[in-house]
Amino acid sequence: MGKSELTRQKITETALASFRERGYEQTTLRLIAGEAGISVGNAYYYFPTKNHLVQELYLRVQTEHRQNVAAALRSTTDFASRLEIALLAGLDALAPYHDSAPGFLQAAISPTSAVNPFGPDSAAPREMAIALFRDVVDGSSNTIPAALREQLPELLWMAFMGLALYWVYDASPDQRRSRRLASRASRLLGSLIPLTRLPFVKGPLAELLDMVREARL
Amino acid sequence: MGKSELTRQKITETALASFRERGYEQTTLRLIAGEAGISVGNAYYYFPTKNHLVQELYLRVQTEHRQNVAAALRSTTDFASRLEIALLAGLDALAPYHDSAPGFLQAAISPTSAVNPFGPDSAAPREMAIALFRDVVDGSSNTIPAALREQLPELLWMAFMGLALYWVYDASPDQRRSRRLASRASRLLGSLIPLTRLPFVKGPLAELLDMVREARL
Image 1 (tube, each protein chain N blue to C red):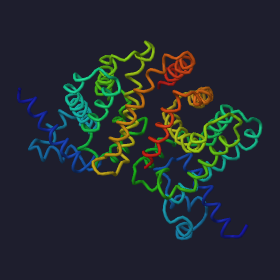
Image 2 (tube, rainbow over the protein chains, first blue to last red; image 1 turned 60 degrees about the vertical axis):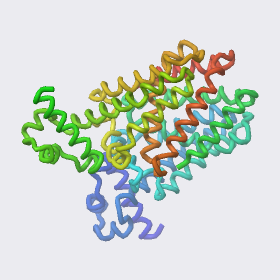
Image 3 (cartoon, rainbow over the protein chains, first blue to last red; image 1 turned 180 degrees about the vertical axis):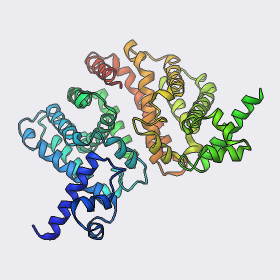
């Protein structure tokens, strides 16, 4: 690893620790530079804005999410089990940031926020997340209609964003209510998959998928 | 109307106009008092915090929402039509605030925010909203299983909150994409109602309702 990459990594680690401990609002690049023993000018060279640090955080959470599921996903081809693994692993990856999550939510929720996870700057971590849910679907041996199979990864990612929103509000110890919701929702979705082949379910399902496609922002 | 009530109303109208034009962040009680021709001390007597003004805004939007649906709901007993009326009327009531909606979302989304619509200070407007969706359900002649009928008003209110979140992000002219989504989702939900009586749908539906009940924060 070159000196430049080491400096970059040092700033990133310091920033992530600060995000966990101080939260989004109180973390400044000036503070990070001081803690990392780097000049402010040098730190700005690597991370011109706080948004650049937040994108590192998003990438880190995605990388951990991916690492958390890799082995477990090889253990089953059952859709509900795979989804449950993915959702719980996602909550595990987020867990260290629970205390600072309200501040991040506040900073990220505005449609014009640079750190909005639906925004252009967050394309890389977002695509990693959707790819993870694509793996969940692709490795499932359940019979899933082709049209649903195609849209399911993005739908599951959106469901995970909804779960993450719930998790921010979850004050139960270790956010166990969010974990329970993730498990129950996975099993419920799994039990709905066989119904999608029924003739009178096909129409509403096609309409649901088309409605979601049209509504994509 | 007494002098006190007139003063209160004057402050409220001035505040709502300011919220629409300046947005949440830039609106201060000091500014409102000046525009309303009232001393700051007097304004603080009626509205000790900005949150008190926001609660007035929430109540106003709910009152408009209720007024917008009253006549139309008497025209039909079809669930999907009633739901569509309620959702579109809700978007109509929000429409004047679309430009300032990102700022409100940012201020309201944190679990600890005083202006969080799920928080204790917003109980009155929230109950008005749920009551409106209860009217939608109660006036429907469709056969709806009792357990679903009981939980449906709160579920529809949550769906409307989701729609409102989508609407904040909706940059289409007159937020017509949100309106289209509201119409399609209403018709889709309406088409699902008859399916709830099918034997193999009953189990997943009961599980869904129980899961939502347990997950209530």
